[in-house]
Amino acid sequence: MSGPIRSLVFTLVLCVTCSLLLTAAATGLKSRQQANMRADRQKNLLQSVGLVAPEEKLSAAEVQRRYDANIQHMWLDSAGRIVPEGDHQPTDLPLYLYVKDDCVEAYIVPIDARGLWGEINGYLALESDGSTVAGFTVYRHQETPGLGGEIEERWFQENFVGKRITNRNGEFAAIQIARGKVSEVVAPERRANYVDGISGATLTGKYLSSGLETILTRYEPVAVKFRDNPTCPSPAGTGG
Image (cartoon, rainbow, N blue to C red; front, side):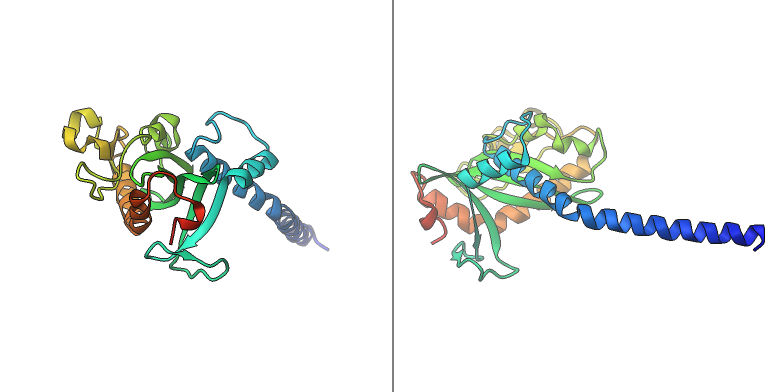
């Protein structure tokens, strides 16, 4: 066998071997990767209602324990009614409840919004009054580091706490990202519905604002139920 042919055969064997090794590694690690992603989502969900501090380091087992002890997951139809477990349709809405002493302290909405370069995934938590934001987190995005990527930073996410999805008249108003400092660019009567924007990331703010409005509009029937019963709604009565 000539030198060039030996080199070609060696290259082919090496490529096939590497491909097989990579495939085996990806297959073997798939379950672990999925478990890590699930733990990361659960941690962000817990963080949105203050059950995990932003800098707190937790094992996957501890995240799961806190999740199981405090969070209830359900599906709702477009009218905000609870869908029996196992019967939900693709158009139904996932909802997470933070339950303490048999009372709903907050409810959590998954955020799947368009960003400048890809999807923005996170959670928005609202207090049981159906109007006040309890927390906001982002666990995955493709925005530019140092610009739109600031949406994952603590300073940006903490801006959401205490903001409202209703205006002064109690009407739905969503949450918007301002083009600058809220105190400088938004009229006083509308500031409760805006958070400070990110310098140099106008488009990220625009897309996230649009996504939040779309998602919160879909969940408005749920919010109305909480507004009608803000004292201590029970998990069973939330979506009825």
